[in-house]
Length: 235
Image (tube, rainbow, N blue to C red; front, side, top):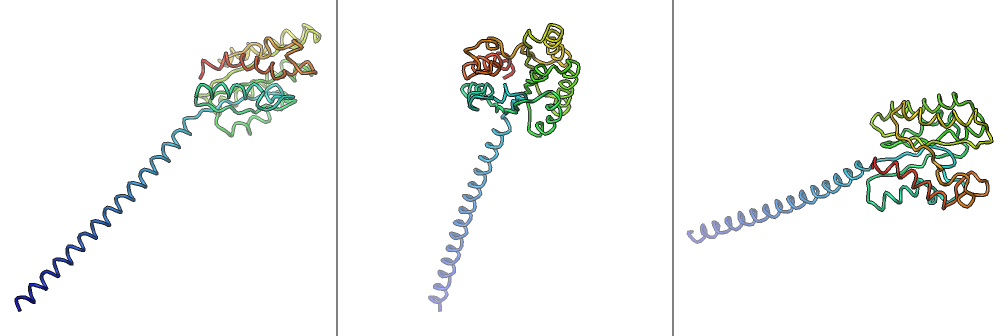
């Protein structure tokens, strides 16, 4: 009888021990799984944080910005992106240039363009207005409307305006107020100003395509350097 009770007692002890071991194993497994999930969540959060840190530079302009006649990677906004990447800066360039764009067309397009985030806004419009002889007062009003919309949507965004000049053949009566429009707008709106986008490119045959208006790949490199001189301090 004593032996029977002893055997029964030993059996119960063994069973309890087995249960405890199994319980510990389950707890360790759950802890390991919990650690893995937490680690995964942490990686995802880190990745999301890095994406949130990326800022956006929006180039809004004409065929000069779009890169008419050259490969997309040869246009000056793409060259700016390459420069940014080489310096490992957290900025993404968005090329919203459109061939033939006038200030009026830009005004009607701006709301759609601003659906994406903007930290730096580069405005390159007005040249097509000038070539068509559109009154400077009308162009000024359209550009101001675009600037107002950007300020309203992204009040913290930095703004850069690129100036243009018209050929002397259009007469001083038009070319003078046209050129003066850009610094006036920049001053009024506290914008950075690049006085002449095509500095050291405009009118130089070897730096332009056959039309004499649009820069070739070498010309775009100089234009990119012009723009970079104004962008770099902001980055």
